[in-house]
Image (cartoon, rainbow, N blue to C red; front, side, top):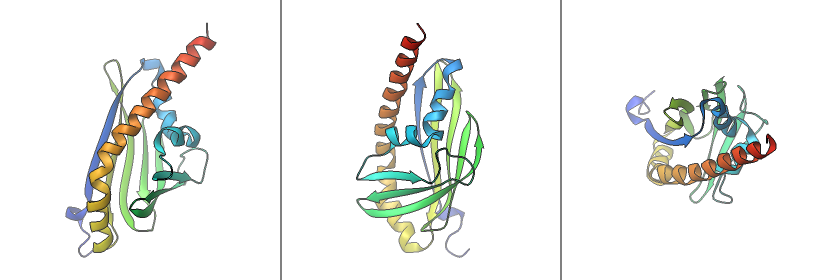
Length: 165
């Protein structure tokens, strides 16, 4: 393994609390699991986006994460899905190694969506590029995109409520 041992992997975490009833918590999961819903809250074209090769993030699905500033990309392959609970992704070749997770945790009055990345570059140069150019902006970006997600879920709940009246 050489220089790329466990101490070189960088763990970054972000999370958001989404106020939602227990019987509607699956809606949050589907905003990650469904490619179209995911794109609507996560992507910020033309700066950062993910392209998935399937409509749903099922095992075997590959997502390519693209950055334009600074120019960089890496691939993650879905390895495990537990419906309405978690999606696990693994670095799939390319410049990054490691895993990423989307986890849902029940919380009083809602759910917590947690995103964890435990990644490292495949060589020292790529690892330092990741650590110094991308990691410092991850939390701010995710918090911003989570605000978009919360708005979309709120709108969807309001639409559903009107339809069922």
